[in-house]
Length: 78
Image (cartoon, rainbow, N blue to C red; front, top):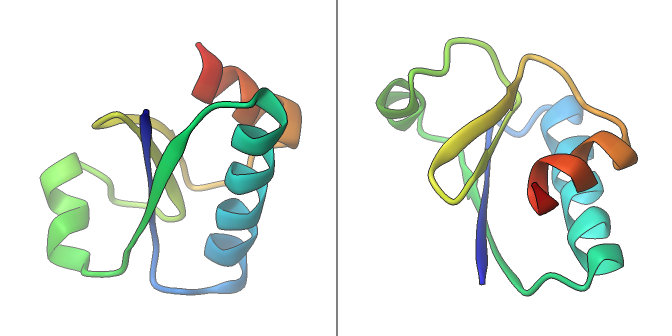
């Protein structure tokens, strides 16, 4: 099971990344657990300075943008 974490304050981009990540995992057929991390102190634990960020299994995969569905699929599946 993949652990997907969305780091962000709840802004529109953060919400968009959440939805794209869910759709990507669903389309890939990957079982996942999704956590939305809104505590800015936890962002620092990951070394993230710009949100939104996508973390897959504890590894930061994307920061500061909302990647396309295909990009997120590659990040989750790769």
